[in-house]
Amino acid sequence: MKIILLFLICCLTITTSTSFGQNNSTSSNLEQLNSLKKSLKKVSISDLGATVSASKGIKAYTFGGELQNKEVLQSKISYWIMDPESEIYVDTNNAISLIIFLKEEEEVVVNKIHAEGLKNISEEDFLNRRIRFEDKNYTFYGANNEKLMPENALKKFKSGRYKVDAYVDATDQFKMAYILKMTQEQLNQGEDEAMKIQNDFEAKLKGTPFPDFTSTDLSGTTHTSESIKGKVVVINLWFTACAPCIHEMPELNKIVDAYKENEDVLFLAFAQDPKSRVDKFLKKHKFDYNIIPDSQEYITKKLNPPAYPTHIVLDKNSNVVFLFSGYTPQAGEAIKSYINSELKK
Image 1 (cartoon, rainbow, N blue to C red):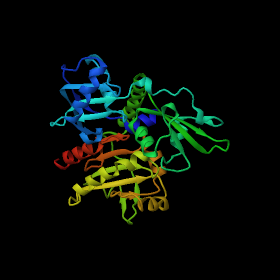
Image 2: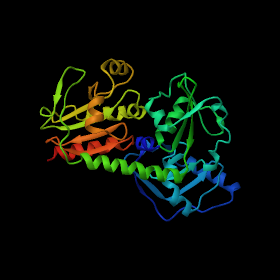
Image 3: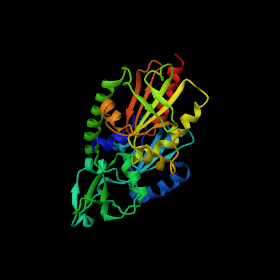
Image 4: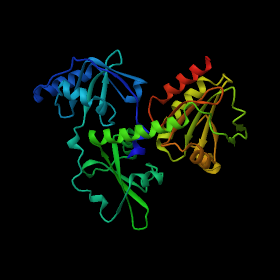
């Protein structure tokens, strides 16, 4: 659970007001809800950028039309916003005005009928197997035993709001998993643990010289601890079966493009996988960093990140000024901010 939460843990700035909607009769709420939806624009959390704001009249409804009071809304807003099952609507100022969410009790599995005859494995074991959600040999289920489309299962998994209950057959081959929503209490416990791991990782590396290395990228260019000095270096730690790593690549490519004319900025991606696997991966996915394959030993022994992807920014003296482990839609904005800050020095 700790690693999964690190994939998705987000640092959001949420501005709210005391002017919240009040409970009403459910019969009239559905009419009000449908009318409200027509006046707003539906978005995803990744559409909102680094700062998430809420309008003064923000309201929250269940899909059944139950309007939430201000106390519940204040205590649950972050949980609802980051849940991929929620619908988010913004006003003309791009401030969240409406959240429609699934009640926790609606995500309860009474009997995991599809797990019969299989062996349960830990979440850590599941992650270590680097399972690809789109693999046709695997099946994923949600609450009430409904089969999930691969893209929906992956979306829930990446949100950090769901736990994985995975199963293997008698030959230890992964077969299926339930993707189940965690309660707020479970999330709070997991996020506390995840934050401690992240803080320990930062304490070890931030403000210190990046560990010495000599590595050759896919183009044949050799990069060393000495050759990168004088540049702002943006580093990505990843592997080809890392779903969150793949998901963020289009955003990272935009950052590379934004600085393509600036010779003082260098992008390096240390991949755990061997060159042959990376070459095969790049035939389907575009990743514009200078990719250094066969980096597993260096990553695990010199850096040992708590999760993937991990982002690191070095100043022109090769000291670590920023690092973050785990997927978040706001990573790109943070990276650009640190690049610009270091370039001005």
